[in-house]
Amino acid sequence: MRYLHPIIIGALALLAVSVSALGQDDEDGPLTARWIATELAGKPVEGLTLDYTTDKVSGTGGCNRFSGPITIEDDAVQIGPLASTKMMCEGKSELEAQYFSALEAARSFVVEGDTLTLKADDGHALVKFRK
Image (cartoon, rainbow, N blue to C red; front, side):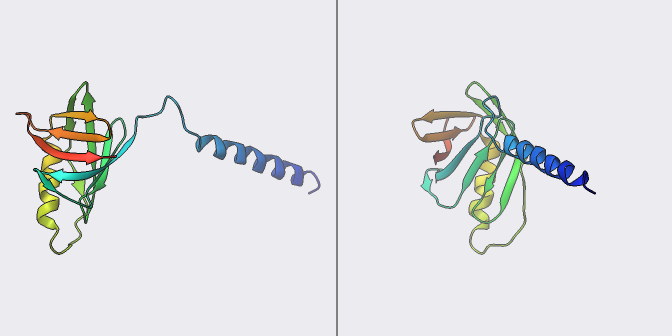
């Protein structure tokens, strides 16, 4: 028992060092960003978010959370298929469906300052975001 105490303390110290290393930012880690939608189909919106890493997208449609794959190459983007929770929020389901459809229809993007615009095949703006 006398030797067990130093072993436990050593193991706890090693665990603490390992956990702190996992919490540090990795400079070679995935690119991440968080955006808040300001316009959908040219109309002002609130409560819609978009978070992404190098290969995954998630966020909220104002009521439900969503997630799915994302592929970015140069200024081309492909989002989806998206999966979402299915909570009922009165008065928000139509806007949410439009938002999810717009994300999946996006084929290109432009970043100008703190503004991200997702565009359709024909180049028209689907959704605008701010950081």
